[in-house]
Image 1 (cartoon, rainbow, N blue to C red):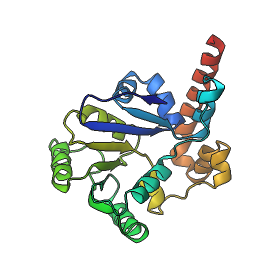
Image 2 (cartoon, helix red, strand yellow):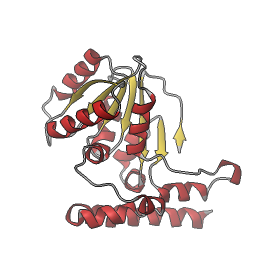
Image 3 (cartoon, rainbow, N blue to C red):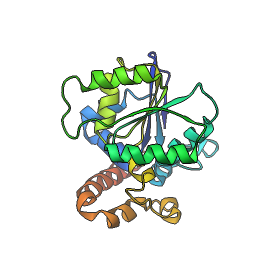
Length: 229
């Protein structure tokens, strides 16, 4: 877990899983983007175990910071406080419609200031300017960025100096989970660090190459680090 003060007004938070951790070490460009984040938390139990192997007993981490749960708990905690205004960036219009309905029902006293569904694939040159203008106009200060990895991390890092004052969360598949479009793994799989296996079983064609590559890289880096110690 990494934390350092940011000299600029946009504060970047990432709930990192093994994919993010392995990609940051194997792809210099992605690693440079992650270096611009202010707070990186372990999203999965394998990262918790890897970190705990390097920490003294008094500093060991007791649980992960799961991105979808972080999102729900933050929205829940800001209910009734008009200071906090949420913005959902990413996903299809239909996904954002489902999320808006869910959050309005589950957290009626939280303020969902605005949503934005960017174009699929490459963006037009003025898309980021449009997003920044919409965030400004909404006066949102908690921005949930669900563009998928690595796009969301690169976008936050590249534009961090331009973004309005707010906390920007990279939360991966949380939009699809909360919209009911992708089923979350059972709690026992999550606790055992096997969420990846459940998701692979659900979406084998889409996720096989990703998990084979980055889970292997994560294991390689972890073992190499242990051997060096």
